[in-house]
Image (cartoon, rainbow, N blue to C red):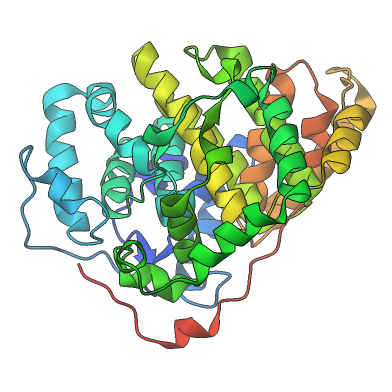
Length: 398
């Protein structure tokens, strides 16, 4: 019964992928997370229906839209980041999946789509990766289309090995080195903030007008376009096709970053999006998986730089030391801790919280009980207030 409910909800085509402009329809993400946490089928369905009526932003979902555009294998790149033709993009990828199989489509289009994984504040990537995780075919089609629709380059092509990073043995070491430089040299943050304040240059005007209405998505796109040498310097750990332990090391660094700003809405997305990127990369060739791995790192740093979410190095070091232990996977006490976190998550109207708990519980299990993930899973976030720019009409197309 649970599988039937989840399958039906993930296949639902009643609603547009966004609402009130560029706000992402998260309903199917919540379905995957709630089902993964063991919520009853009636709870999952009720959440989906309630979210459709009224999201935590105070708006309901919008009906699906139909575009009269046509997308082909020769023209699909013309739609990258243009925010138009969503239903036409879905039709294109649906036909491609019938021709090649879903994994074949991901293998062919995934590498190029992942170059823009930060688009839609990472939600397009989440939509695809979480669909693949859950086996939701139509949700995956939507995710592919949405990654084209909202593509924002992370500019990982600028990355290269850096002698300054040669001693970094892990993503945590690299994050620590970057944090030391950020806090020792105010010019780093000043360069990024100067770029964010610029709205007149060709680079600024190249960003879709709807993202300027967002604030957050504009800052992410502008930060990624501007970049900084610290973002692009690759350490040896980022120079080989990633294995399971390499993805886990990346999760460790991003989770420590989240715990340095516990409950931060932006950084939470780096955790849930990393789960998506890893899931997509598992369907790619080794060299393309490496590009996805590097691209995630570059994009995540671009997001953190744009939002000035670089913790003090001593805090990062203290967190890593305090949370280096492992739990007993069979401990009744740890089971009770998880039960409390999951019970809270299932009750949450803010769907990012069950998503956080779902991903971090998976990590806790596969890492052999890393305390870090159990602690972070309980650090819930709040729905942010929308800026006054949302009083302006959306720059929107079908």
